[in-house]
Length: 184
Length: 144
Image (cartoon, chains in turn green, red):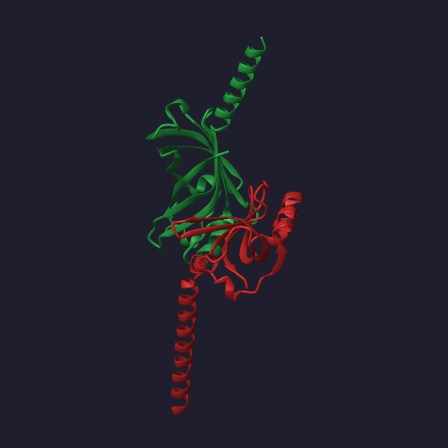
């Protein structure tokens, strides 16, 4: 009887450890966005993105501080923060999603996994559905993930000044890169 | 008549000078890079522990005080992450703390932090971008 209880406890601890190892996070993910337009191309990067991922449930989250986006030109950065995205009022953007089929991802086995992510993006105080195709690459126990999707600025009530409205792109390409998910 | 002609010439000359100055100013302003923080005065000075505590206690108040501002933060290095010598992030606080101060170094000043290691005391100046799991600063430079 005692032996059976011991086995059960060991099994329970084992299961807990395995489950615990299925949760991952990264504080140094990168989000870039690109906008091509006749007036000028705009490009910006933020490398302090927080992300968490649960391989069992397939839940995946990203949080980013808007003021952390860096631009090549100071004026561009000022316009982005003050006129377009109002980062004092809306300092964070958030993506909450779930893998459509978490079972197809095997993080303890090297490989390249293409997965569909279904979720919602909160930006500029507006939450809209946002789906994306993500690629997880597992190599020597290092889990890297990338994704790309487009965001229509009008969907998030981001107003482009009338003077430049015809010369600035109305859609922005967003590229996400998680260099390494760490077990939590 | 001659006086009128001279006046006219002066007006055109003045206009040309004004347009040239405005053009140079607009060009320089358009191409201006984000400021190097080693040449910018900090707007506040604090410790990593106080900064984290303030954000934990009242994020709105802390944002009102620090968001978007250049601040000096002194603390013990808990971790240095180096991604291919292009992105170096210095985390200030205790190793087992849940919330710390995450400082992304300015690319131009990456070498200044390479002489430091974990557990060293350091003073960094950076722009405070707010609070996620950590308080985040970017464009950081070492202050000696």
